[in-house]
Structure formats: structure tokens, C-alpha cells
Length: 494
Image 1: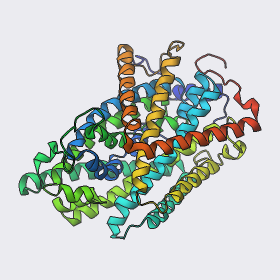
Image 2 (image 1 turned 135 degrees about the horizontal axis):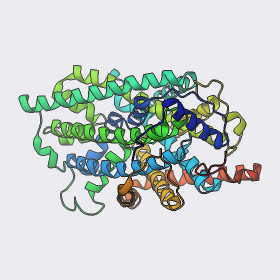
Image 3 (image 1 turned 60 degrees about the horizontal axis):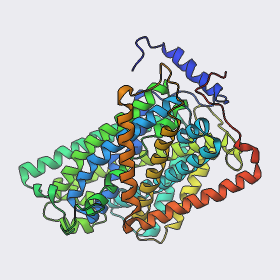
Image 4 (image 1 turned 90 degrees about the vertical axis):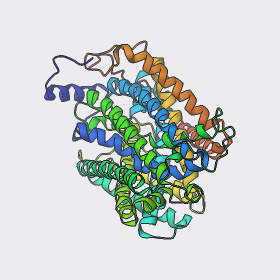
């Protein structure tokens, strides 16, 4: 419930800044992000064009055009998870999101692992997003011939450009992202109308595709963990990253109220617009299901055959902008997470990675580390023909693990929670939301951990956890006192 007499903006900012001091930090960033900026960060990292351009062709191979109907299921489940995140973000409004929540509500030992899983998730997502920008947008836009090596080089160059913007200025980064969000919304809605118009008035489509399994046999299609359920990759890969708004709370005005609703609104709008886009694409396939399924540029081919090459090129330009902004926001969020862990001495060379030269810029060396690790991951896929598909799987499983762990954290710390008047809360809907989020996460983890199709993704996730264990051991040997308890911000200890 909202406060009937909300405090003035200056009072809110003062209270939020006092929480930073209570956490044991000196304020390092200026608050330059407002309501729309916070929403845009979440919406941009979700980026329905990024996800759908990347995964639509893959999902056609898993479950055919009818696989799009997993989208509303994933959307509802993810909104429930985001509401749980909103309650945690309001309780501990600090950069570093789940790392800070686990560290302060339980123990820094657990917090370190939450931070590491978040780092692995954001790194893999950065790689997959920039790979997608290269393979499904830039190469068809300029009619380049795609090879694994050329894709790896292009992806690395994109990451260096994003790194430069992150270091340069947060306000400029936010403006670029806000413009990209408007371009993505207007371009996607316009394209939906054009495709439906071409189908209705010029018969360039087939409505029966909405229930067609395409090249997938109908036998066992709807079985538990059958082809239909595997199509959940479509939504599970796309509808992630909305929590980045919580990772920039120290740069957001009134974050306890703004950030939770920014995450939820971004998911609702993405879910609705994304569903109409998927319906338009499926209908627009027409009779060419087999050819489109085999294409590396499925979405671009559908747009071309329904509304023509000119519209395709215009949309590809918009998609390039949207995907670039998506990768930019993810890398920014990852840099803030590294910075949050570094200022607590949780990683090697923490003093270096904790530095923020200017309050309107990014943490330079944290951003450099994030970019370097991401480029290193790209280098390992340099000769892999299935690079994008493999990273998509890993970029779906790791966030599912992170979301499940964070909801479990909320359940474990809920009993001792002392709600404050300005906290985001769900009232009587709290437990139905939490239970629904748990059910969805169990289903999602089953989808991406049981079937053999995701074995490669599981190996990548396991490798990330093993690497985290090695780094944890190294840090523990270097500085065993870093495991000390951190102040609980829910207790008045100023």
C-alpha cells in the first residue's frame, strides 16, 4: 500500500542516501535516472527484438510456429518473479542487487555466490546479445557473408564500443538507451501492423500457422517436456535482465518505489507487444515453414516476404540500435555488480575495481574487466558454427538458476522482515505471488535441466560454477577476514 502522505522528493533522496551511509559506503554516483530511465533500463535489457530475432528460428526447430504459445506462460511466471525481486530491491536499495541482498540478509559467504552467479549470467547474456546483433542483424543488413570467425570479430568490436560509452558517461548512456527504447517500441508496433496488413489485405501469410507444429511431428508434441515445452526457450531467453534496474538503484531517484514498478511495467509491455509480434511472424511465414525454419535469418526473411526488402532494411536498422542498447545495458549492469563486490573486498584486486573516477561516469576498471571476460568468452566460440545456439541455451539456464536462488532467499528471510512505510509490498497478494513464482521456477528449471537438448548449456553453467569455486578459494586464501558480517539495513544502526 502506498503512503497517503508521501515525503517530498528531497526528503526521499536524503533518506535513500542515508541508507547508503548505513550500509557502510560513501556515495560515488550521482542520481541521474528517473522513472522512465529506470523502466527503459529494464525494457532495454529484455529487448523483445533482441530475443525474438535471436531465438525465433531456433524455436521453429524445437516446436514449430505453435511454440509461440509458451510466451504468455513464461511472461506471467516471470512477472511473478519480478514482484518478489521488487520487494527485495525495496528492502536493500543498493547496487549489486542479489549479491547485496544475500550478503546483508544472510551472510557475505552466500552473498559472494549470488554475486558470482549474477556475473556469470550477465556475461553470458552480453555475449549472446552481441553475437545476435552480429549474426541476425548486422550481417543481413549489410549483406555480409557470415562465418564463425567474422562473427566473433564483429562481436568483440561491438563490446569495445559499449565499453567506451559505459566509461564515458552514465547520463549519455541513459539518453542513448531511452531513444533506443522509443525506436524499438515504435518500430516493433509499426512492423506488427504492416505484417498483419499484408496478411489481411494481400494474403501474404497463413493463419493456420498459429496452431501448426511445422516440421515437428505432432506425435507427443504436447507431452511433458515435449517439443511445446522446449519452445519455452523463446520467452525464457528473452524475458530476462529486467532486474538491471535494481542494479542501478544508487543512481535512481526514489529507488524504493521506482525500481520495483519499473521492472514489472517493462515485463508487462514486453509481454503484450512480444505476443503480437510473434503472432505476426508466425502468420507471415506463409507456406514456407520448412525454408524459414532452416534459415539463419528467419525473422528478416519473414519481413522481406511479407512487406518487402525496404521495410526489412529499416527494421534491421532499428533492431541493430535496440540490440546494441540491450548489450550496452547488460554490460553496464555487470560492471556495477563487479564494482559492488569490489568495494566490499570480495574479488582479487578489489581496490582497483572499486574506483569510480567521476560520479557521472562508470567504474572504469570494473567495466574493463567485464568487457575483457566477455571478449574472452567470444574467443572460445571463434570456430564454432553453433556458437549462438549454445550461448542462447547457457544464457537461459544460468538466469533461471539465479532467479530461483533469489526467490529462495526471499522465502528464507521473510520471517524476520520488518516492513517500513515506504517499502514496496503486495499486501494480501504477497503469498499467492510468491507461491506462483516458485511453481513457475520449478517448471522452468525442469525444462532446461532434464532434456538432452540443453546438455551443452548445462556444461557451460557447471563450468561457470566450478570457475566461481576456484576464484572463491583464491580470494579466501588472500584475505580470510573478508567473510565478516555486513550491516543489516533493516535495523536502525546509524
